[in-house]
Amino acid sequence: MTVTATSVDQSDQLQPGPASGARGGGLLRLVPAAASALCGVLLYVSFPPRTLWWLALPAFAGFGWVLRGRSWKAALGLGYLFGLGFLLPLLVWTSVEVGPVPWLALVAIEAVFIALVGVGVAAVSRLPAWPVWAAAVWTAGEAARARAPFQGFPWGKVAFGQADGVFLPLAAVGGTPVLGFAVVLCGFGLYETGRLIAERRRNRVVRRAAATAALLSVAVPVVGSVAARALVSDSAQDGTATVALIQGNVPRAGLEFNAQRRAVLDYHARETHKLAADVRAGKVAKPDYVLWPENSSDIDPFEYPDAAVVIEQAAKDIGVPVSVGGVVERDGRLLNEQILWDPVKGPTQTYDKRQIQPFGEYLPLRSLVGAVNKSWTEMVHQDFSRGTKPGVFDIGGAKVGLATCYEAAFDWAVRDTVTHGAEMISVPSNNATFDRSEMTYQQLAMSRIRAVEHSRTVAVPVTSGVSAVIMPDGRITQRTGMFVPAYLVQKVPLRTSTTPATELGIVPEIALVLVAAGGIGWAIGSGPRARRRAGAA
Image 1 (tube, rainbow, N blue to C red):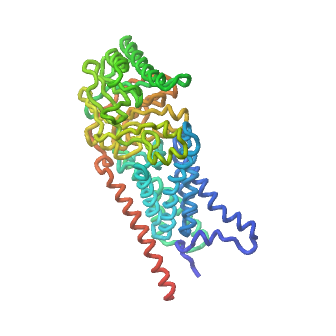
Image 2: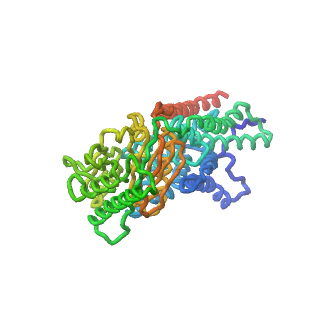
Image 3: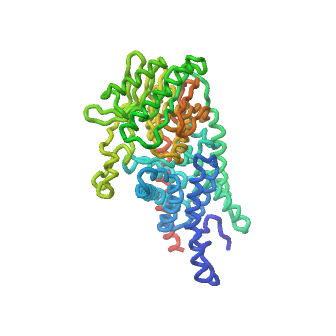
């Protein structure tokens, strides 16, 4: 009897024979679980600060191997193990200030999404051209994770690990959904190609359509990324601007809270005065504007005149507008605000952060959290309010879009700065709370993806590092160290054209979610039909 390649279930292959013994059979049953967790770890290792982006491919190839042909219960557990292997090390930075409980709780919740993806991948793995359906299911899982719970948490999107990879230009085609889909598709396609080659060597019949689909699953993402390079450019379209980034650093220890806040403000002012002195000495070019990071003035300059004086003196010394990250209270609302401070006119424009961080800038389930640990509610004693308008500062004719820190992880929060006219993007951030963890490098990679996605220069001023200037092609041209005072000055291109990703917005993601839904629907519907055919036979 001939057996087609599509009829062999992996669950059958992993059953031990009678001679294996109970002990050997038990160990063999642990292989898929261990492999799934290790593949998750492999995906984590592909993320920054490492440049091993290509490890995402064997990670998904292995994930496809453990899921193909599984029951939904087995796939749920295997998917959860993959999620734990990936997210536990990726998100360990969340425990730096608050301990392990919030970190473990966050991972436990986020891994549920990946577990459900595992169920979906196992379901569609019996369909023709299953890598396509499976990759779409992964994208649908990321879309859900980016929206719920508590406004979503897109950290760990596959696309954010590809800043140094060959697939990066695909970000300009359809944003993070298309870039991530291509990587996952290629990984699943590699497994399917290897599986069919193995079947052929066993003298089993391999259908030409299945072989073609497997090869295309690998080839199309690679060829597509090469073709998409035509969309990537760092040429100036509306002139250039000389931009300065200030990294003032933060005091390490020994000061109480209010003194810490004042020290951070003073540090950023001091580094701006140093820049101004170097400009007068001819050491660096005079910038057209200066960008300070998020929380560079946690003292409200509208409420406290001494803070306003410090900022005003720095702006007058450098002689150009300064974008200041402030914490302000207005009409009873606490806001994470960017303030454009003109050396002559004072504060002229503001932008209020819209995507605020749960458990960092506001506390969902406050009474429940307080019952678990009262100190956590004291750390976030007042919730920040959300801004309502996109941030685009007009600075002497140059339009600078603003996406504050956490917002860089959200597709919409960066895109609508460009659709509202931004010619470059600033991502002011404060990573000091997370010490020297990988968090700052993971976030920097997000900004590199956004640069290519929207073909814009991205400036990343950070309180304690790593601050950087990123060209529209994703290259970092200047960067600072961590926990050092520094400034960066560079002439950057201002661009006005839009990429397909900017124009299409959420459309590619919706299309891939519909593909995933169609595949799962087909898989669910094909089960009863197959059983009826078997009964008739």
